[in-house]
Length: 442
Ligand SMILES: Cc1ncc(COP(=O)(O)O)c(C=O)c1O
Image (tube, rainbow, N blue to C red; front, side, top):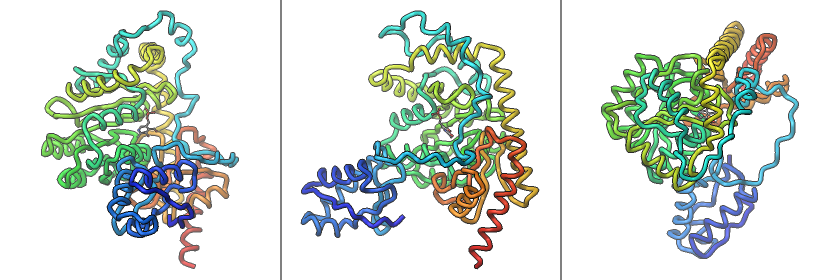
């Protein structure tokens, strides 16, 4: 986006210049993606040295407010870590297959368990993790081959990922990430001042040669989604897990973070490339897709050093994840009907994915989605496709926010997509591609 800057950046020092830019982002005067003036131009305008403005821009980059430099220019990032003034989007009235949420009807009811929680007061000094939750997590993660000698309870997968990154990396460090990948991870990497390095994927997960290239080029960490990859639905199978482990064995000091955000409803078994023998690793398994995102609970397994850092840092900040939430997760996990519900949800999502992919194929369109809640559909032009589908009553996600170097696509969340809706949606997607073809040929 080449936004013309109407906002006058002010300041006599690097700190003041950076503060002026931050204020403009906060008030909405500088929109996301806006290009900042070249260093020399702004320096001349403000009567400052180029070094002062460069220092202000560097500070903004390290805080994830700006990205890029040099001839490509410095821009405000897509989602700066700052509560910016945003207009609430009007209710579009469209059928929303964009949001990436689980189907609320497939989440286990909490009522019967909730009534029993919070009876005994938990005070300062209590252990951070509920013993029963640790026991159940050890059983589940251990069954999937993940070493469970060191565990912690996090406030969701993203909380775990952030804490692990912060415990090992410093601003400026490079991190290998999936491309396409989950925008919140890309935003978090930027917000921590880290530099993302794209690793391409196929249906079986990250490509080993791409990972090797990123690590050889200096990436210190690798974040990936072993199943229910968002947006493509990729899932690491046994051969790919072996290949990835071979690559990682050549980079024994690289930090590896597995984001198992969908857990038992992903629709495929868990695979891990982590374990004893790796220096620095963490597997984060969230309950967001199986029990509901509002629980904000994820289990983190890792090597002794990583878990000690994460728990130590948590202790001096938030302290712990509320035992009310931990108790609710433990109660749901020990309810046998919950396991059946996970299975039912995984089967329902698999059926909805297959149905949409099949309907698209019948219309000559390719979609991918081996696991998880989404189907990823390569398209020629994202904006035109999204607009076409909106005109047909569908809200879908443009792939732009998920991509670095990978090709244009849209994401459709299948979690609540009914059989009756599927064929119409597939036909509309197919029509959108014919429309796009005609438009661009004209
Ligand atoms: C890949 C991925 N990671 C993490 C999350 C968020 O997980 P949590 O709610 O546990 O932070 C999502 C949510 O959709 C996701 O798609």
